[in-house]
Amino acid sequence: MRVKNNNQGFTLIEVLVVLAIIATLLSLVTPRYFNSIDRSKEAILKHDLITMRDAIDKFYSDKNAYPETIEELVQYKYLRSVPEDPITQSTLTWVFSPPLDVEDKGAIYDIHSGADMVASDGTNYADW
Image 1 (tube, rainbow, N blue to C red):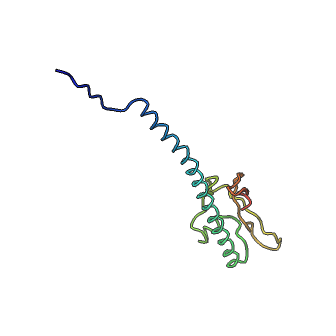
Image 2: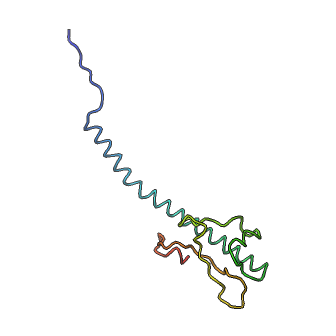
């Protein structure tokens, strides 16, 4: 009587080939994933800047003066809250520009990101 040797399973070479294929696929997908995260942060930043600039303009139209602080926009319900800068991940890094005309009252004429990094289009976030 013969004993049948029935070894079923994967060889070491087969496992290594599968791992190499998985590693190759991950190396292709990972950069795209992180680029999509950066692009989404940039889209959020653009939207937040538009929203805050619109709130500043509405404040000026109603009060005939620019806001002294960003919290003043929240206090008078022009914004629900001060948005977090998606690049710096802080509400404290916004950079405010005063009015160009010295006759204008208030301290905040324009707002920019406080990030000192370069966007995917080659411009500085602070210039947006």
